Image (cartoon, rainbow, N blue to C red; front, side, top):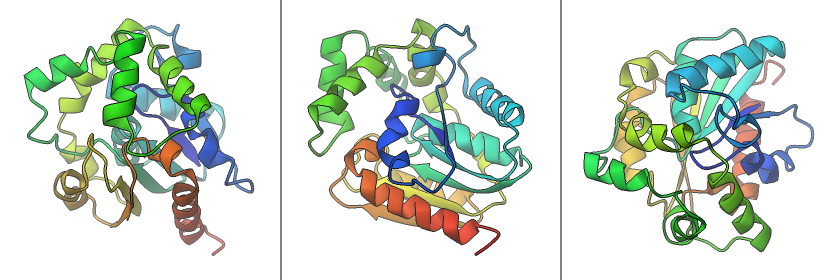
Length: 241
């Protein structure tokens, strides 16, 4: 399983989920410009992230895998899956950026979003009022703050100013492996209805699951439920099932 993080997250966003999949080989990546990769120069585009992940898969000789992408990482996962890399068995899209941006993604919205991680105070506000819908442990709250502030400036602004508004539906239509789309019932960033109308119709084969009482940070808010869904999906797509 190859895990891709959200805008503001890092590889460690997936740690609570990976810990519940002890028998599975997993790889979690820090995108260019974020966390351990914050010193890497841009571009920080979705296409560059997809190329980076494909290069990592080749370098690590990963030839049998499922992609798991959250939010921005879900949009990157769609681009990777559309490239039909050898050994890809399926894709799990968690609170994913949709193939077609929602009508609410206006220039005014994007300009405001570009400043969401400008300060510790703005990150805390976004974390507590927008990103989550259920309580988190203090350590996770601090982790969100650290990860959101870890990025190179260009990486912080590329997604809200451009990536979030990109229409990748032509690529999403090319995905020919099974997909599992997971939404948070109370996700205010990528709402259930947006995923139903702006993502599902562009996937040839997709299952849709809504996790109750959960916001956008599903890997942290509903780790056990998410791990169970991912584990079931991977088992279904295993060649040995």
